[in-house]
Image (cartoon, rainbow, N blue to C red; front, side):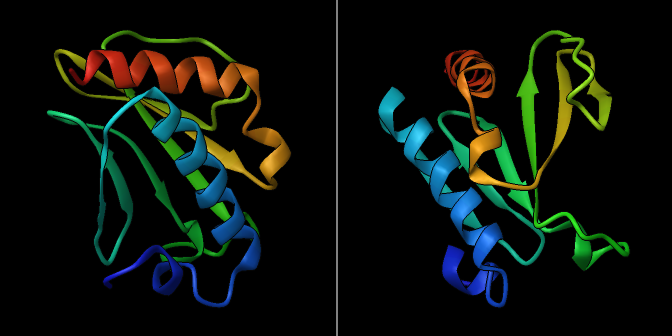
Length: 118
């Protein structure tokens, strides 16, 4: 994969969700966008957010998952899952079905992740 468009080929909703997240994180400052076969990562010194298609791995109607890396655990019923892959990182997985779900609360979480990724 070389571009977000290719990554979300066949899913206009997934592409729009990526665009919404991208628009938010670029307001914070400089970022790097890295596209792999499995996800699109947003990075500063470290990656702080990822957008991926759950349908690549499991049967799912959800067009995109937004995974947000934070140095602490946040509790919200919006998260599908919270994982703790390393002592200083909690991954918060949010199923996103429309661009409307990239709201003020998600923007605050993304800002906190951006700041922590230094």
